[in-house]
Structures are given as C-alpha cells and as structure tokens.
Image (cartoon, rainbow, N blue to C red; front, side, top):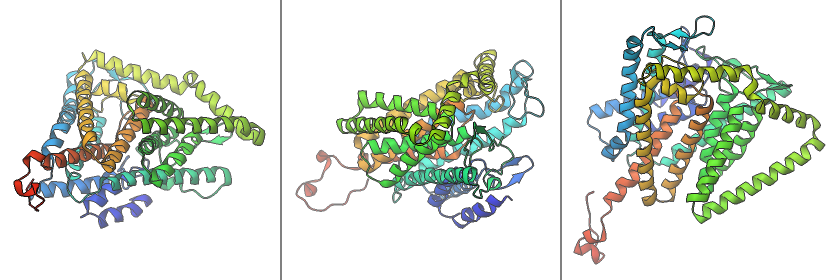
Length: 476
C-alpha cells in the first residue's frame, strides 16, 4: 500500500454503495495517472481502477437483481461495434502471438534488457493490456447504461471533469513553485507507480520541465488539451458557467509552461479544427464568439511578444529556447526513436497480412500505428464504424436536446477529440478510464435525449380530454 493509496482508498470504500460518487472518483483519480494505490511486484494499480472496479461490481449486482435502465436498446445499438472490436482484440491477444510466433519482429511492452526488436511471442503484456482494456471497455458500456437513468444530472459529471483539470493545474503550479522557489513538493507521493517510466527531472535550458501528477510533460499536456478543448467548445456555444472559463485560461497557461511539443502541436491542430468547424457548420452566434475569442487571443499574444523581451529579457530567452527546441524536435534522438517504433508497428501489421499481431504484443510511440499493429485492418474498420455511429447518434440528439444537454454533449465531444488528438501524436495507448467515462457520458446523454423525445406524445396522439386542457396521465 502506497502513501497515495492510504489517502485515496478510504474515499472509495466510503462511497462503495453510491455509483455516482464512484464515477466522480474515477474522474478525479485519473488525474493521478503516475501514482499507484497498491504495488504488487513491478506493477502498480492505477487510482481510477479502484472506483471503476467497485462501480462495475455494483452494476453487475443490480443487473443480477433485475434492474433495468432507460434507453438500453439505444445504448446497446450504438456501443455494439465497440463491444465487437474489444472482444476481437482480446481474442487476438491469445491467437495472433501464437499464429505468427517467431515470424514478426515487434517492440515488446516490457523490455528486460537493451531496447531491441524481438520475435513475436506470447508475453505478459498481452495479459496486462487485456486487463486494462477489459476494465475500461466494461466501464464505458456499464456507465452508458447507468447514466441514462432518471434523477441524474449529466452536467454534474462534466463539471467534475473540469474540476479535475483545475486540480492538475494546481499540482503543476505547486511543482513550478518547487522548481523556482524550492517549496516542498511530494514527488514520491504523486509518482509512485513502478510500472511507468517516470521522467520528473527533465530540463530545457535552465527551466525544469513540468510533469505534474503525470509520468512526463507530454502526458500532462495531453490531459490538459482534453480539458481545454472541452471548456473552449462549451464556452463558444454559449455556456455562462465560471468553471469551464477557469479551466480554459489556467489550462492553457500550464500547457504553454510545460514545454511539451505534444501540447503545442495538439493546440495548433485543435485551433485549426475549431476554425474549420466554425466557418462551415457553426451558428452565427457561435461564429461571433469564436472570431471574437480568436481576435482577443491574437492581440494578447502580440502584446506579450512585444513587451516581454523589454520587461523580462530572461523570460524571453527561455521562450526562445523552448521555441527553438520545439521547431528542431525532428532532429532529436527521441523523435528518431519514436518514428522508428511507429514505422516498425506499421511493418508488423503488413507482415501479419493486415490481421495484427495481437493486443499488447507491440508497443508503438503513437496511438494510430499502435492500433494498426495490435488489431489490424479489421479493428480499424470497426472503430471507424463505431465513430460514424456515435456521430449520427449525437447529431440526432442535438436537434432534440435542450441547452443543458447540448452543453454536456459539446463538452464530452471536444474533450474526447482533444485527448484523442494528443494521444495520436505521442501516446501508445488509451488506458486512462476517464476517457472511457467521457465516452459513456456522451452516449448516455444523447440516448436520454432521444428516449425523452420518443416518450413525448405528438399532437395527433393526444386524447380529446388533453386537447381541452384536462389533466391526463400517460405511460411512456
């Protein structure tokens, strides 16, 4: 049991009979991605997995007792391609390493010696990655069912996601104060998982890079890109709450401060997508907000570029160092190693005739090549089918929803897109349960909207008594 586990586990046990609280703890626990609740051998149990497991036990018990949820058929129809891909991935982890054993070279999940390509064979990575996938997929499906129930406010869980982003900002600022002012900072408390390569002492020039509660700066930037994207899209669509505004401003500041090229590139891609979406499909009100926000941000950036070199030459020199290292990233050894790992992953998919080498058999540098190597062409096509189904599902619900439900769908969609974009650039897998919980919240919110729209009778279906204003009761 780690020190973090002694602080986190009592909350999980106290709320073990309250599914909503457990889902909130999944969101908050995902912030501490490099910590461990319990360490067993060389593996650490990630904090969000504990409330996720307790939530799954409760839902399984309720299903055994006959509890049913609204919109089950709608949710199941949307999640069916995802369930099929997950089942195929788990089967592939047992079948493909034995079918192509010794014939294909891969980068293993765990390396016992010097980094090198090794012949494909069944390994412990197949089983550990299967466990992560099974828990996360089960959480996505179970939460999608549970969150369609009456009496639950979807915005509450989205606000917990924004609060988690602010918690990351607070920890990163604390670390920055420790680096500059030598304030006490409990590094071992936040970085207690031996299963991660913990890079907390990297520097760029005279500036020590920030990683916060994550294993490396790129992971910190990737997480905040999701929070910032969700907050920005909610605000641009007219939301007046303060929580997303704080998340947007402070999250952007930490992304710029952590000096991760992943964060800068992800923000550039998201800004481009935002402008395209605004130009082609946004409402006039949203277009005005986006354009005004772009003008204000551009003016502030120009003012900072003009005044910072005069007011603080040291800060300007550090900024120049960060900009130069980001631009020259392609010339670094780490970039060459990452590119080589991605190319080898694509070669592994081709060598397996497009079938893939099995889930957990190969470790790439970014998500796209990793999925190609693990699940092959069939898995990519299944995920595309799933993505198209979610897009249609949300588009139908968006036309029927009120402003509150639209805000939740906007936040979840943008948060998923931001996290996915960052992972496509520099993340081998998506193992954080908060991503799958955001996916579940998006599917469930849209399903609730469609279910409620079907339950409302059309004018032609009203009884004569209802037409004259006499109260009636209808089952639906």
